[in-house]
Amino acid sequence: MIAPAPVITIDGPSGSGKGTVAGILAKRLGWNLLDSGALYRLLAFAATNHGVALDNEPLLEKLAAHLDVQFVGATDGKPARIVLEGDDVTHAIRSETVAAGASKVAALPAVREALLQRQRAFQEFPGLVADGRDMGTVVFPDSPLKVFLTASAEERARRRYLQLKAKGDDVSLSGLLDEIRARDERDTQRAIAPLKPAADAIQLDSTELSIDQVLEKIMSEIALRDIAG
Ligand code: DC
Picture 1 (cartoon, rainbow, N blue to C red):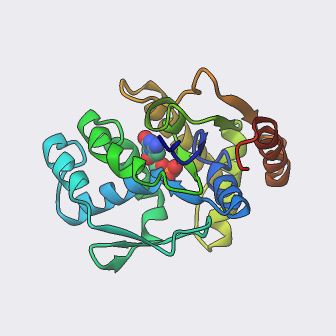
Picture 2 (cartoon, rainbow, N blue to C red):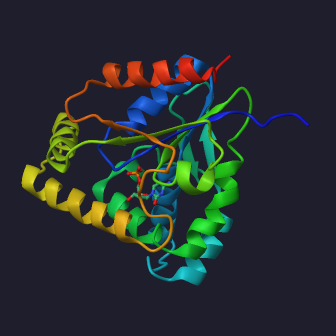
């Protein structure tokens, strides 16, 4: 039997730097990239467009199972253009409003189940870097390298603040900190697939590390495990 394509999982709260790290890592390795948070964001976005309430589990389950989405150009770690029902929503799904909706639909068991196979379909050769909250615990439990990336809530709010300011958005640091704390609370306390490190995950705190330093640590774990050939 042929061994399945290897998966490196990177889980952690929003603002920990996992999305950036996962993208660079996938590119460096020439592997595929799964931004699983985008799927929850897409579902919240589509639900709002279709007038489906974010707590209507049966309808959200149907919508999740039939989500018409394409990740265009998503190879070798390149950030994909995301097309939902024919519309380019790459930027639209990155708003704080969509993030808050994503966190709500992500708490529904039927939604998570409906998105499971869709996520596992990304496991293709030569390998996959998967970024999310439950990549190591639920979606790819056999992954040979699981990273759990954290940072203090204050530092994560500060990073988000700088990002949004750079885009010209009018945001307040204390408002962002409150939103991050509320989202952390929902993501870690939910009954199904809560945000927590897998028992065999390596935990990295990026509060005082640069992206390059985080990458260096992950690359040395990859070398130790002889994962990427
Ligand atoms: O990583 P992100 O900010 O794009 O994720 C958006 C929301 O989706 C976040 O609040 C938690 C949820 N999520 C999840 O529950 N499981 C995942 N694997 C990825 C994201």
